[in-house]
Amino acid sequence: MSRQYYEFFCPVKVIAGKAALEHIPYELTSIGAKRPMIVTDKGVRAAGLLDPVIAACEDSGLEIVSIFDDVPPDSSISVVRTIAALYRKEKCDSIIAVGGGSAIDTGKAVNILVSEGGDDLAKYSGAGVIKKPLNPFFVVPTTAGTGSEVTSVAVITDEVKGVKLPFTSAFLLPNAAIIDPRMTITLPPHITAATAMDAMTHSVEAFTCMAKNPLSDAYATAAIKKVSQFLPKVMDNPKDVDGRLELAQASTMAGIAFSNSMVGLVHALGHATGAICHLPHGLCMSLYLPYVLEYNLETIRQPLGELLLYLDGPEVYSATPSSRRAEASIAALRKMRNALYQQCKLPRSLKESGKVTYDQLEAIAQMALDDGAIMFNPKEADLKDVRAVLENAWAG
Ligand SMILES: NC(=O)c1ccc[n+]([C@@H]2O[C@H](COP(=O)([O-])OP(=O)(O)OC[C@H]3O[C@@H](n4cnc5c(N)ncnc54)[C@H](O)[C@@H]3O)[C@@H](O)[C@H]2O)c1
Ligand SMILES: [Fe+2]
Image 1: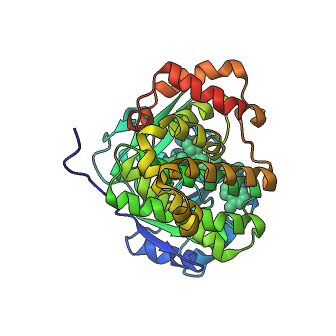
Image 2: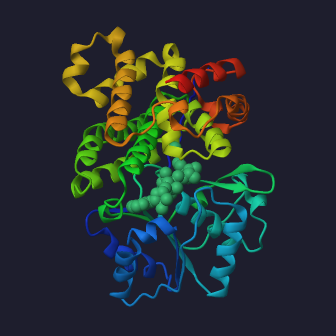
Image 3: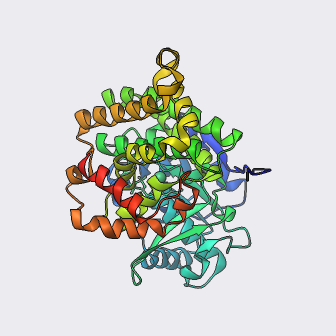
């Protein structure tokens, strides 16, 4: 039965541009935050990215009270507890997450504990468990991929049980997202490439999955066009500030798209592969995207064919017969992956990644079947189907 309505929700204030960082103090003080803590990781700090953030605050008289710079790639409950303890000790009143999805998701989880009280993060896991607004929370993304600055989701590892806990609540959304290209210009090529493929996957899955709607479609197509147009430029010239800003905005748009229409099997497989093999999230997206689209092909032929317009432009779109456009979209994505392999050796197969063994495929398949994202895949998939996708992604 077709759905009789859809919902679209994005209440995050976005401040974007080459001088966006300078607005941080105003955003904090306008809601009464005076004692912020920065949550970040060592890579971001080593890239010098805290300096302009701290400088922007100092110039305005706002004091950064505490900095935690040790967020790991798969952030865990114990890390979140450690940061929450520091926040309380320093009597902070707000959080600024500066980093990629890892730092942002960690900031969201810390905000749950310091706002709700207590130390039991796991009890807030799931959808809609948090019932009231949390403390002031600001996000400065330093990768252009996850879109976490505009999503109501965080994923944190429960290291005791060996599982990833999802947290979903509109109260996790930041008060403001500050998108400044100075923050992504230092990204090394392989992280630029992998995170851009995450944004691309958010958009393609949002546009082809069951909960798609006209508003999320608008954001998804705009993001696909920007990634297709500007990723090659930024890979050629990493210091292209305008291109970096375009990619960062594409990532935010893709985040808005997928948080309103969900993602599918690519993400189910990616979450499982991240948990079992510790492969970066964006790389997982790139590794699975064409194979999942091939699996879904007959169910999504029409919307996938439409995407050719945004992936390859109007000339290629009109020159391609409508019956072949869906295949041409997959070919365009493969071409993009091949270019990224040439430019920065971004792996094209699980085998090529060197971090997945063939005998792990069964465990990945089992875990993917339990992932919430699989429910939104446009075509149902059982163990045999998921194994077949994995075999294709293994061989490349
Ligand atoms: N909440 C959501 O909506 C959502 C969506 C997608 C992914 N995620 C999560 O996001 C995480 C992945 O985030 P990510 O892909 O942004 O990577 P990341 O945050 O793990 O960062 C990857 C690496 O890049 C470095 N780095 C980040 N920015 C840099 C910069 N500007 N210059 C130099 N180095 C930089 C970091 O130090 C780190 O070593 C995963 O845990 C994934 O589950 C969350
Ligand atoms: Fe993703």
